[in-house]
Amino acid sequence: MWKSNKVAGLLDKKQKIKREIEKIQKDCNHPTKSLKSIRERVDSHITVIRWVCDDCSKLVGYPSKQETDNFFRE
Ligand SMILES: [Zn+2]
Image (cartoon, rainbow, N blue to C red):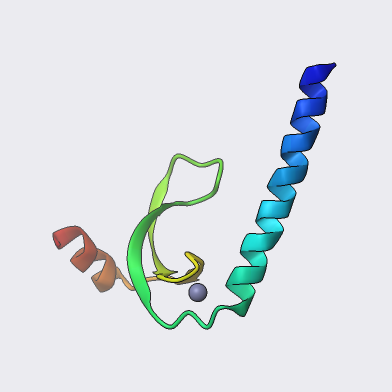
């Protein structure tokens, strides 16, 4: 029983953290962005190259093929 209580508490915390991140990302103007290697989805092992905001870590764009090629060359 204590396990399910603990999980419920953690899930609640996770929701709160998720909402807080969404709020920060919504308020951010994404002034600077960088190409980063990130996981395609939270539960995915596939990494993809995306433009990510330096301030709030939100995905803000998809790179062109050339931008991706340059990323791997560096
Ligand atoms: Zn941002």
